[in-house]
Image (cartoon, rainbow, N blue to C red; front, side, top):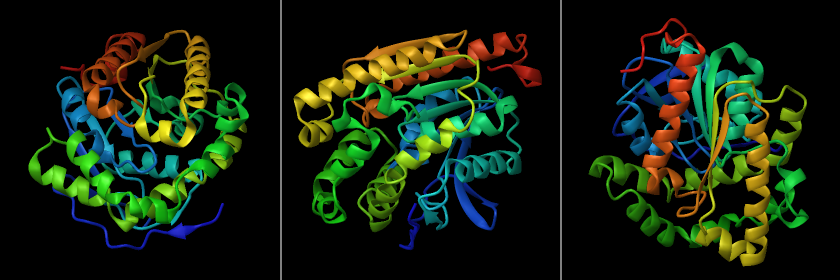
Length: 316
């Protein structure tokens, strides 16, 4: 891995708080009460408050936490990319510093799956359930054509200059996706997603994907906890432009098989396919489906723990 520090000035978050972990301030926002607490792990180029709509729904029935990894979003700088163990350990320390009791339901989107899996490897007793939102899996390459392997998709990713040239379109897309967010929150998120920090952090984290797969393969499989894999199969315009229709369809077929096999490896697993939204848009366009999946995993986790949330307050 090559390390690159995100040094552009972080923007000021309109909501949330900061917690120091290992000498760095991490931004987080916590809502709701009860347990098991739900923790959302953002994908590459995404940050915690992108999941505000999902958090609002989850907070109606349990504690919901969103946060920014060091080097991303509103958190302090860090050399990027980082190992999955570094990110998972940081999250574990953050939750303990904030007195958010475990075990947790981890909701991983995209690259967040690598960090959720490593968290489960390091702290299996702290994982009550998992929701996989089209999330990273260490076995990706085994299900994909060579043109869609982790290394190949990294080579297909836009360059820094291409990203910079696309910022006006990204601004418009963000404004559309975030139209229902409070104005101050929407404005802050839009400005982040057209910032130099956004460009550099996303590129650096995506560059780590092949190494993350190797790191995860050295450890255990996902734990036998309630698991729902939400698999969006709608056409993502950005992916279509880069890959073309034939390769994109092959990728959709591969990931459908991958996540079906993943949920089959646990006692209480389910795959839910969404045909009307894409990889990046699912947490904005299908908040209802995402929140329902989280609710179902929370309920199953409570039942598995003996209907008492492993000693926590029952969800409201």
